Length: 379
Image 1: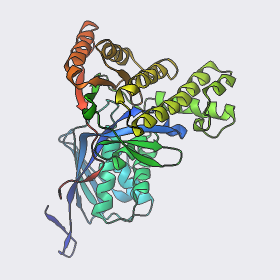
Image 2 (image 1 turned 90 degrees about the vertical axis):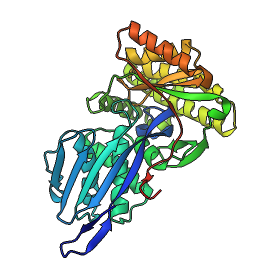
Image 3 (image 1 turned 180 degrees about the vertical axis):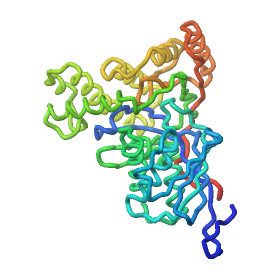
Image 4 (image 1 turned 180 degrees about the horizontal axis):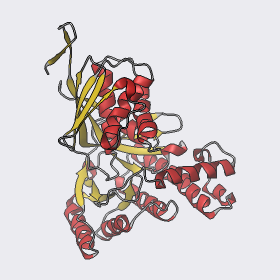
């Protein structure tokens, strides 16, 4: 990379290229903001951030997905700037560093991504984490991974306005190739769990239903408020503190009862899957647990759609061992645990059902557990 110049003409630290992956959650949906358990893995699809230092106090961002748009804002003015659209994500990260007292003299950020947008695969977290790790490394800021995750998450919560938990950013930063990441969102503890489906003749198929969702449209925030209300009525700080699903019967409001039942039962499902993988069991045994998670998300949390349900039902009918919607819901993707040799059959069945229902053409690919955020121009 070329070097930037300081005001006196001397060379500054050179820029570089960093990448952060999207993620898919094997199990554990809507549990992170309830202090519960999750099991994500990183995808090979990433957001790349090319970062170059400046000395004039400006943050300038551009994106290959938005050609011709280049946003330039003084870092000191980010808190009040009328920033809209996609640029709020990278600029929110710059602002969060600045708000915490980390000195950034100015920066150019150029973004490019292959994580499908709106598919429930955490394209926004990948973007935030790519920028966060780029700024940390570029300016040699004393920020450990735990704070890096928090910076990216606060940018999404406070600057963008999406009240997500820390699952997505933790996965993007901490995942390791060939493994799933067991996350206790209540304590921040993580554990790398081997996840080698190919050795068992299996594949994890992702089906993007091509019905993008938007987590800032109010439904996600409403689910979070309902969970908080259920916890308060049950007399606990967070729903993760309820370990017996029978306890939710004490909730008089049927909506709160359903929301709590999903979270409590989903935490139990995560622990079941993690234990099976730790013990080296045939991964096929987790299939019914994935399907049970979809039923819970559809009926108790009510975040599924006709497209997601059709994709799940089609995959199961075509021989998948288990399938469920992933992400926040109201659109996005499903995963299906399939025999590797039967992947094409499952894809064909889903496409046929979508065509018959006059849904948009789905996009499919096989997910491989991949590496977390890293610098890529030095590899």
